[in-house]
Every structure is written in C-alpha cells, then in structure tokens.
Amino acid sequence: MEAVSSTFLPSCSNLMSALRSQAGTIQAKSSEEWEAELQQRREELDMNMNTNANVVDQYNKRKAEVRW
Image 1: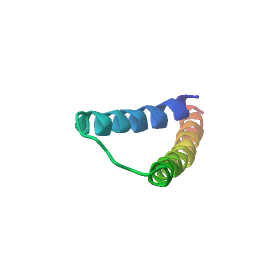
Image 2: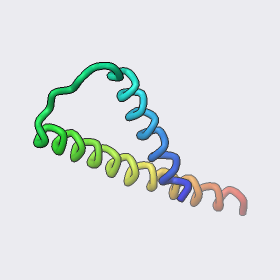
Image 3: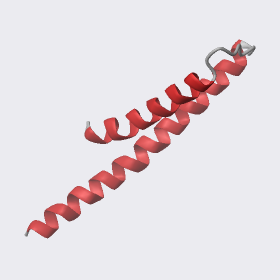
C-alpha cells in the first residue's frame, strides 16, 4: 500500500497542477483525444507503480539484510 501511495500521490499532484494551469481555458478535444490522453496517463501510472514497487521491495530486502 505504501508503494501505491508514494507513486499515486505524485501522479495525482502532477495532474492537479496541470489542471490548475489550464483553468479558465477551454480545451476543444474530441472524445477520442480525451480517451487517448486518459490511456496515456494510465500507462504512465502503471509503469511508475511497477518500477517503484520493485524499488521498495529491494529496499526492504536490503534493510532486512543489514539488520542481521
């Protein structure tokens, strides 16, 4: 759960920042463009979650080894 929150929250923060910077502007996009953008964001999140989960696992393994 910790790995998910550490990757998900920055992604949400980046998305919110992007939305705030676009506040007051109208984005004329087709539904296909919105779907493509959403799919891209999902793929980025999946990639980050998979990569970061491995890093956390390695850290925890090394941490356990150092304690012994």
